[in-house]
Length: 178
Image (cartoon, rainbow, N blue to C red):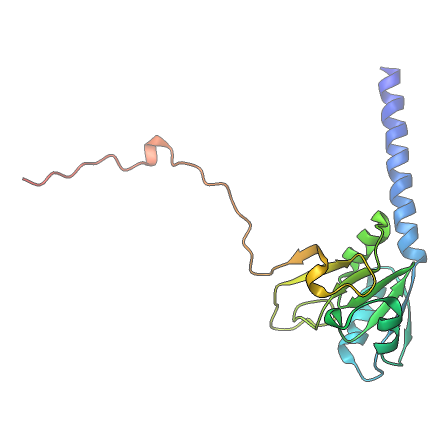
């Protein structure tokens, strides 16, 4: 019994430690955002990142040069480009996906949400469109060659397993015509 309790205690301590390290990685991560000084949705995305524990530095110089320098093709382009812990983030990528990226540390250039889909962080409003967060594995990779890292579809219904009706609810009446 003592061995079980100590095993549970050690497991709990390790779990808390790993979560602390992951949270600390996000808390210490500084995101450098390159955007236009007049872009309102970029400013909203910066607020989204700050609300999720990131330290953000903005550079109001546009993002075309940093996008090219980071190895993000124009087919993946959006209105801002961010750099965090060696990864490039193009467009309105949700903070949760960036946190996952920083935890998993895949060999990749970064993440992208091409264009500016309605409903993404910073683009909230009355309309929400389905969109994908794309993993960019190689420099200058085209949109068609990326991997879907996460999908968002506000219209997708969660499938519920269909179950047959109980015998008591089945219609057992038979109507006969003469």
